[in-house]
Length: 420
Image (cartoon, rainbow, N blue to C red; front, side):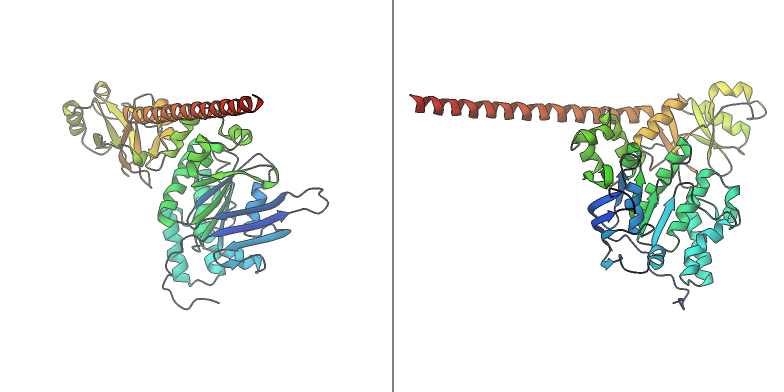
């Protein structure tokens, strides 16, 4: 029934999801695609389904909003058993984002985002306001993107709009089926950071399918490692899976370099982001020169008119910048956000080969710099923690062996006594 007020409701936070003995068998198939899956996902939690191709992870996800109907089992969202309610109404209450965004090409960005709010009867003024709010939330300028069509957007921008559309009606649950799989690696990193930032603000319940274990570590509060037919091999935190994989199958997903993979668990916002000398592209040349000559640093960061990192300028560039900055300096090739992982930051620093990377906000605006020394200190701390953990584990094994040897000896003594 359409709403009669323009007053927005309080934002919806996440809802518990329970899968109870969920099974899907396709007609003519000798074995189930998904078999007897039971799982509880906490409200506000990001849970990642990861597993080999064809293991049933996407099928499991699609059964939650009944894009695929389960053969048997129950699905509960919050206190409601959704297995028997109208699936169309259910899908309007559950956000859904897929690979390559799935935007309607004949609709503008605003029309795509407004789709579900209009369907469920939101007033026009509330819908219009929500579209602008969602564009701003995913880091797209409403004035610039409102009337564009999907073909006029980059792949990363399309995915942002896809997420905005999925969240537009403020659902408690967001399902994401390999949403970042079709974009280039740099854009993918930025979209992952954006999702982490959004989740900090919104606290939705997110179920996310990926085949990329590094992505699972970066995004997940918990990870469900799935075998064939979505049988759960391990369902635990990224830290627990990295440090204590349940079996060889899970170890195969973790792969080599577990200590370095833990760099995906620490964010740039958790380490030292420092200020750095900056200048604006429209500042007088003389003032830029004075700042370079007088500063303790050998360089400064030149910002564009939107305060986004543009060029690194060194003192050695002064000779080439007597009248213009056009040929002087080195273009900024990569930045990271505060929600980027230490691994992202380390890769950016090594790629730039200058010992630091600029940290940016939602619209790409400059926030600060994180440097190689800070990153390496954190890497050394992780490696040292792993070394101490390995030593402790070794001591525990030695104690267990000694205890077993003692018990075996006691058994021999008792046996010898009886024989005597």
